[in-house]
Image 1 (tube, rainbow, N blue to C red):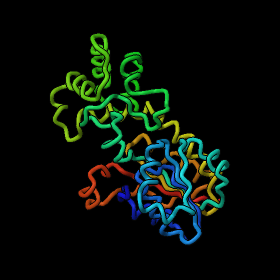
Image 2: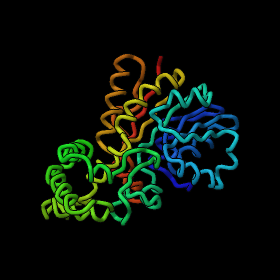
Image 3: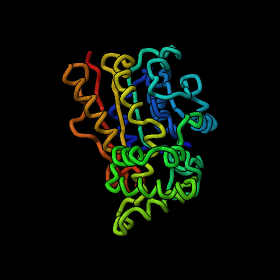
Length: 297
């Protein structure tokens, strides 16, 4: 599982981990960032890594590279929206930096079998935490047409949200929508034929919207960001990598407000984006934006 995460070099540059400092990685994922920090904060620096998905943590623990860091690494299966509570529970103090990489892990898309990818035939689940109450299947089969239209428009920024919502309701009146391919076919029927041949796959925005709704991603981010200020030391750093404009807007506005209040100082005026080389090697990185700030009081 030791993959190289998006903007790895830039993340380490802005977090700037030094010997014996402690860090929090709010989104363990494949664990690449966590391992990179552990290499920099030896011999006594610690990392607290959080993930909402127990499977992700299990996968990471079974990886060979974690063994040497066992003593310095705390893994927690929880939602980063509970950051303050997690830190209190784990008695994790003197935090020099906090990282959020809001991208979906490759494991979720390729291996989880939970319907995150429109390129695989899987049940419509889309939960990061399999104990969560809401699934994508519930949304498409039981939510009202206006509600479905709203999440496609707001969370997916999908311009054909109304047509897709109508077609979803039409389909479910005939048979329940159970799988990813069934949903992709519904979207295909709903949108104009020209939309089927865009650079971005025509189902991308709908799948993104459902995933955000199922996991309450934007609310969780809005809850977590203020908690970073109570968790990180003075002169501590907060680094956030987002993958779509809605997340980036939340981060940008939060940083802007705290800079105004003289609590944070921004470390980059414009967001850092991947190089052409990185995008070539990892096309999924193309929409990544990194913003960083330092707590000045």
